[in-house]
Length: 367
Ligand code: ASP
Image (cartoon, protein in one colour):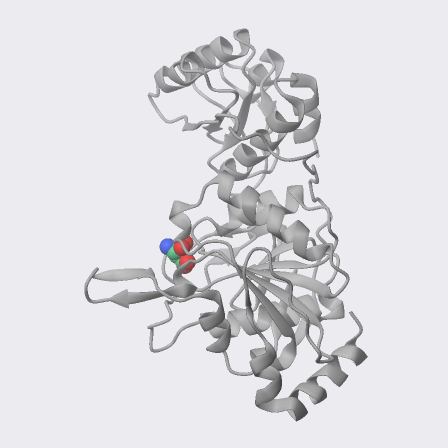
C-alpha cells in the first residue's frame, strides 16, 4: 500500500464527507464492497469480545451488544483512514471460542486477503483467547498481508473505553509501511506483539498483552508505527483443502505436585488423537505422569510437553523419570518456547495435516 495513495485518499474522503461515509456498508459473508473513494480498503472482521459488549442491568454483567458496523461507526475518524469492509463472523465473548470457529475466521480472512483491493485485515476479538486465535491464524494463513488482532479491556458502555483507540491504531498499523511483514500480530494499548509469543498477563488492565523476554514487535503512537523487532520465528503450516468436519481431539492436561497420570490415561483410553501435557520447570513431569505418557506413546498417541513457566523453553535437561531428557528419549515432543495453549493448536493442525506421523510432528515442533 502506498502512503501517497493513502494520503490522497484521506483528502478525498474529507472532501466527499458524509456522502462517502454513507457509501460504506456492512458486508455479510458473501457480499463484496465496491467503493468509489481513493481510500485504501481494510477488512474489519469481527468475532465479538469486550470491545463489542455492554454492561446490562438485566444480566448484571457485560454481554455481546454491538455489531461490527456499529462498532466501526462509533470510532471518530476511523472511516477517514480507509474504506472499511466489515464482516461479522460471530458476536461472542472469546471464552466461548472454538478451533472450529477460528477455522471459519481463517477461511474468511483468506477469501478477503486474496483480493487485490484489500490491504490487510483487522480482527476484532475478545482478549481472553485472542493470543491463541491469533497464533492459529498466523500458522495457517497463506497471505503475507498484515492481519492485526485487537479488542478492548473495557466494554463499550465504559466511561473510558479503550476499544476506539485500539481500532484506530490497528487500521493505521495495517496501512503503515513499518507495519508490514510481521504476519499476524496482537496489538492493544499501543504495543504490537507477535502472535507466537503474546500472552494475556493482566485480568482487567488495558496493558494486558506482553511478549515478555521475547519482546514487543513495535509500538504505535499518533499514527506512527515504530518497529523494534522482526517476527523471525513464525511457524507456517497452511491447510491443504478444507479442514475435516470433525477436528482431532487434543486434550490439554497439567502436571502438578502429586498428579497421578489418571487424566492422561483417561484421555488416551477415550480416544484422544494427541495430548498436550503442561509440565513444570524446563519441561518435566513426575514419575506417575511419565508412566501415563508412556501408555499414550505405546498406543501411538503423540504427546507434547510444555511448561507452566512463562519464559525460556522446554529443554531435555533432567534424566530422572519424567525429566525432559527421559521424555525426549521416550518419544515425547518437546514444545520448545511455545505456550501450552498454542502448542495444543499446533498439534491440532499437525494432526490434521500429518495424522499421527510422529516424525513429522516432531519436525513441526522444531520450528
Ligand atoms: N471476556 C472478554 C473476551 O475475551 C474479555 C475481553 O474481550 O477483553 O471476550
